[in-house]
Figure 1: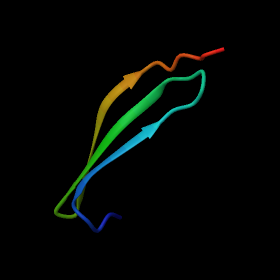
Figure 2: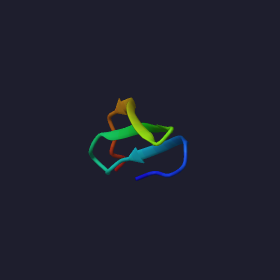
Figure 3: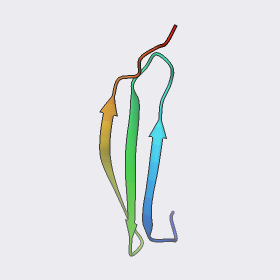
Length: 45
């Protein structure tokens, strides 16, 4: 459980797979998760 209000950015990615960018906003002890963007990851060979 978060104990501090604020915005937290989470980026997850894996080579050859899609990557996700999430923004988590914590206000007054409540956690709100919003999907910022989804984008395909291009494998560079």
